[in-house]
Length: 96
Image (cartoon, rainbow, N blue to C red):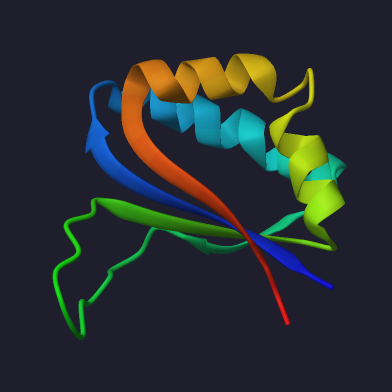
């Protein structure tokens, strides 16, 4: 069953670092069988309130693959880079 990682970027402190993070994370995601479904773009709120700067959706073959990416030695320095450069909420969801 597919799994999805959703990132909700709330604040950016270092845009240049995030450009480098995105470049390097592309390979890290692919190395764990993932692919970007949404990577920014214009977001339109249809109901309620959603104060976001950027939405990211990554599809993985399953939850284990998503966790393997997030917990990998390859992603660890990238995670630290992202955390220093931005405030981002990240969730993992099982697909149907």
